[in-house]
Image 1 (cartoon, helix red, strand yellow):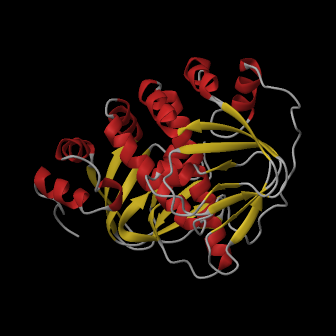
Image 2 (image 1 turned 90 degrees about the vertical axis):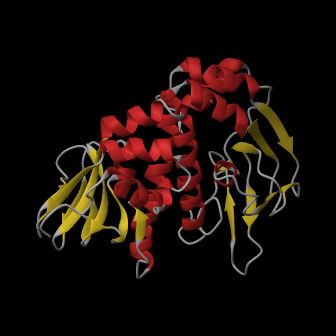
Length: 314
C-alpha cells in the first residue's frame, strides 16, 4: 500500500460523505472532519487500539480487515469502509477494548479531543450522531426496548404512593440510567418538566406507527411491548425507559406499548432534553455514552446468538 490513499482534502470529504455516520453532516462539518483526520497504515498483527489503555481516537477503516474484542470477547468484524473505536470512545471505557489488524490496513484516524471539540461547537453534528446511533440500537434490539431472548424478568419496583417532589425526581434521575454524572444545573430544568403519570392495567400507551415525541421512565409496574410480528413481544418493568430510541432516531413508534399492571411513570418531551443537551455538553456526552455502551453490549450478544452480520460503526 505504497503512497497516500487520499491525495487531497476533497477526496477525504467525498469519502466521508459516503459513510452512514456522516451522511447527515453539512459540507462544512465534513471539511472539519477531513481536516482533523490523519491517514494511517497498520501492518498485519499491529494494534489500532490497545486493551490496556483508554481509547484516544477513532479509526475509519478504508482498506483491510480488523478483529475487535471487548474484555477478550469477540465482536462483529467491522465492514469496510467502517468505523473502529468510535463506540468505545463515546462509551468512555478506561480500557478493555482491542482492535488488531488482520491484514495490512489503511485508516483515517480522528483524535478524541478533535471529535469532542467538533461536537461541542456544532449541535447539528450531535443531532446527526443521536439519529444514527439511536437508530442502530433500535434495529439491533429488533425494534423493541430490549430483545425478548435473554430478557431479565421485569421488576415491579415500588409505588411512591405520593406525588414526587423536585428533589425526589432529581434523585431518581441521578441514581442510574444515562444521567449519573451530569451536572445538576443541566438536570434541574428537565426534572421540573417531568410529568408523573399513573395508568391502570390494559392502558395502551401508544400504538406502533404513531408519532414519537415523548418518553416515559417506568417507576412502578410492568408494560408489554410488541411490533406486531410473531413472537416479537417483551415485558419490561421498573427502571426501563420506553419510546426514547425511536424518538431520538426521529422515527415513528417502532412498537406498541400496553400496561400489564398498574403503572407509575415519569414522562417528558424529547425536545426538552435536546434543548438542554445543546446547552450542557456533559449531558450530551452522558447520553451518547449510554447509547454507545448499549450498542457494544448488543454487538457482543449478536456474536453469541450466531453468525455476525458485521458492524459499520464499532
